[in-house]
Image (cartoon, rainbow, N blue to C red; front, side):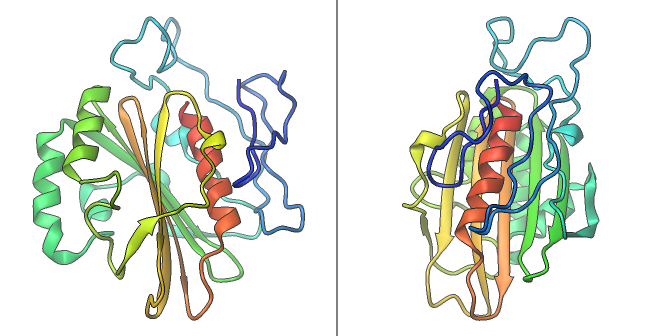
Length: 237
């Protein structure tokens, strides 16, 4: 069952009895949340278990990974490169500092990476959102890559343009989705010409990277970032 939580509070915004296949997106309520369309989980191939069921020890997502990406919210301008389809490894590597890409590329080759799905958009206030879903042969490979990235108390291999990334202490553990482990980070001032928020989520055989950036003096807002992450994790859970 998907229960929609408000960003940073854990308050349920959808009926607890609602079916997994018919879940409304979080509507903007004057606090900065983005207005997503109705969310739904894709149908599974006949006989395939959900990723965290007893019959799925490898914790594999049998649904098409592209259908587990969040749709763009109202008012968004779609990223022409990240359209919700498969993307080459190089597109994902481009998110990281140049001097780290060769090493990360080798880590991906060693981790039995199957494919990467991605979607991005820009909001009217200039906030850019990008999400990548990396799928591996099993949960063990996804977890191993998380370890190789040094993600935990640190944000791991640095993204382009980031300086000091720290754990986001405003993230509410009450918003945790069973089976999904998020690592949430915020770039601390001074952050130059662009503020970055990022999070990794490990969900069985899949590793998600969510990035929100905003150029200028204003930070990328916390509430829509955490809202996106909550919904992202619920779709993977």
